[in-house]
Amino acid sequence: MNTRRRTKVPLLSRLGTASALTAAAVGTSLLAPWAPEAVAAPGMDALRAAASKKGAPYKWGASGPHRFDCSGLTQYAFKRAGKKLPRTAAGQYNQAQKVPTITRARGDLVFFQSGQSVYHVGIYAGHGRIWHAPKTGAVVRLERIWSRNVSYGRVG
Image (cartoon, rainbow, N blue to C red; front, side, top):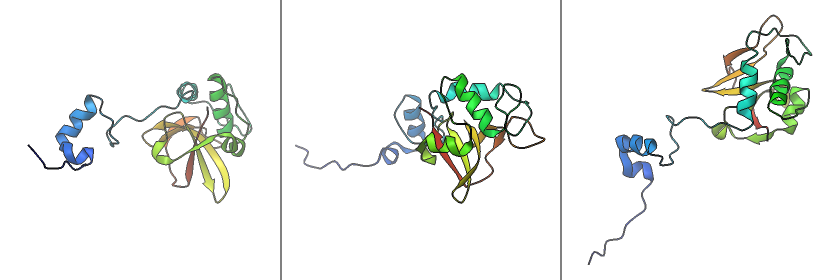
């Protein structure tokens, strides 16, 4: 009779690198950098709506359908997804459910902050990028997140 005790070893330690890739392929749940990013619903519909406005000119105070400022674009995109958002980035920040960076998902709102003030918002597109209407003279575009002073919010 075998009297040795089995100790609990973390999954990744037991699997090893090659086996971890196999486990991920067959559906074993692993938190791994190669795993596809999650999608926040209804954020995916909003993300598609924002992307469809690629090239639309920035105009302060505009909320579409042909010109946008940052919060106007996010408001427009989520309205197309069936969700109502406040008009300003700060209002959207106050309404959104806060999510930690590690659990951010495509379709989440990305809020740019200076101290306690929210000054810009975009929609997370995955891989550290957002769709947004950046500034006067620019157009709606996909761009890398350029600051560490960001937080994420989910529209439910």
